[in-house]
Image (cartoon, rainbow, N blue to C red; front, top):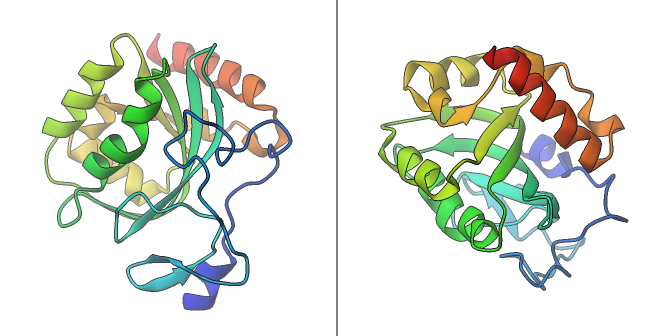
Amino acid sequence: MQSELRDIEPFYGWLELYSHETDELSPFHEVQHNLFYYDRSMNHIPAHPLWDDFGSESLLVKILFADYDAGYAIIELMGEWNDLFENDYKLLAENCLTYLIDNGINRFILICENVFHIYLQSDDYYEAVQDELGDGWICALRLRPHVAEEMVSYGIASYVYWSPLLDEIPWRKLRPAQLFEFVVSRMGKALE
């Protein structure tokens, strides 16, 4: 398992379009990544150093793209989403999403194919973040089936939108604006 986590890299196909290290509005502006030193971890298991730490012991993040003019961001997650012991959503909101919200982003696409487990407790903080988003939204792509079931059973799916229609999107083959348009169109179809 340890060597497998070390090999999971965040998606890098859009680096010519966006780098959060040079984005002055990003919470990870000027964060250094040393490819020879594994200083990021998930539950004390070393993870690939290109992931970013937002204060969680069990979940790492990478802002893949942010478009402040269009008001959306695409963020990839890796690890265990643990609200029971780590308050991961609260940490994600306070240490990442809020920075982006304060700068005009209110629509978020969370890539969750590398979220292995999810442990939820309540929806209070999810509701507070939704209030901050106004008419915006958060959606998840590529949820593992057991993770999607947990989100639905705890009522989180009303704050973090997910649909099997979203999982059909070949997101790695698209440019960020194309992915955003696909998500918006699929969300509309699923809500009809």
